[in-house]
Length: 427
Image (tube, rainbow, N blue to C red; front, side):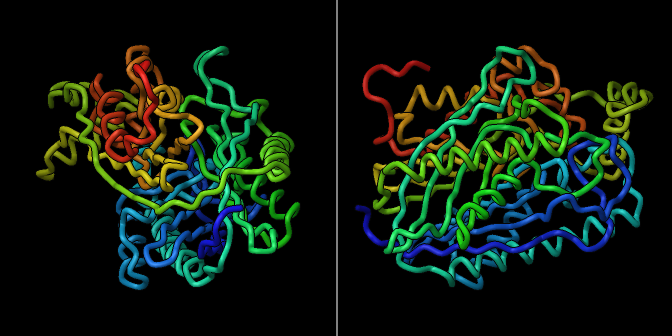
C-alpha cells in the first residue's frame, strides 16, 4: 500500500456568460454564446512543503505569457516555484479564443468588439486558473497516489490511414485513506476535433465529456484530462455530438477498468525541471519574398502582410523560438515530460525507445501554444503539420529541419538518467 501524501483537488467553471469568438477553426468568425457543455479549469496539487500543481484548462491553447502570469501570481500568493507548475490545455476547438494564441488563425483582422471580448475572457480565465490552483493547494489532505496505464482506440492518424498513433492512456488516481476516489488524472493523444467549423458553440469535446462521465461515475471525484502527442491524430468517427460523447465514454470506461486493478504506488520525492530549447526557423523569407506573398489572397497573403507591417514598425524578425520543455519525476517510479504545442506522435515513440516506457508519461499541449512541432520525418513530408500551419500561429517560417533533435535533447535534460533503458538505445 502506498504512503500517505498531502494532495488537493479543485475545479471551477470557466464558461463565459457573454458572446465570444471561438478558437480552433479559422473559417468560424462569428461570436457565440451557445453552450453545448460547460467549460472547466481543474487543478491537482501533490506534496507538502514543495508541492507540484497541475492545471488543466478546457481550451484550444494558451500562450507562455499567460502561463507565466498564472505562475507568477501563484508564486506570490502561495510560494509556488515555476518549474513545479504546469498548465495543460485540452485543445478543444469549441472554447473561446485567448489573446495571442494562434494570432493569425482567422487570416483577417479581428474586429475591435470581438477582440474586447477575447481580452476580457483571457483576463477572467487567468484569474480563474490562479483561483483553482489556490483552492487545490488549500484542499490538500492525506491521500494515496497510484499510477497505471491503459489504452483507448478512437484516435487515428490524420495524415495516413495506417500512420503512427499513440493509443497509450496513462492515469494517476488519488484515493483518501479509506480508499474513496478523490481524483483521476488521465491523458490521451488525440485532437479534440469531434466537432467541425460549422459547430459554433462552446463544448469541452471528448475530453470534457470524459471528465463529466468520470465524475458522474464517481460522485465527489474530480477528473483532469490532458492531451499527449496528438498533433497528427483525429478522433474517429467524427463529427457530431454523439461521437464526442462516445469517445468521452471510451475514456471513462477505460478509467473504470484501471480503477478495478491495482496500480503502482507513487511515493518518491518529486523532482522538477523546466528548460527552454532554441528552435531555429527555416531560412527566413527576404522582404522581397514577403512582398510577393503579400499579393496573395488567403492565409499566406495575410501572414506576409502582417509581417511586413511589423518590420515597418521596427520589429525584428526572430530567428528562433524559445520552446519550453518541463519534466517531473516521482522518485524512480514515474517520469512525466510536458512538451509545448501540437507535438506529433513520433516524439512519443522515440522517447519510449530511449526510456523505460512503463515508467514514462509523455504529455504535450502544455505551457505554450507556438504551433505544430513536427518530427524530422514529417518535416521532410511537409504538409499541414510539417510547416503549412505556420501562417496561423504567426511564426515567420516553419522550423528548421533539426527541430526533432533539439526537442529531444531538451527532453533528455528534464528526464533523469535512471529512467533510461538499459543496453543500447534504439533511436
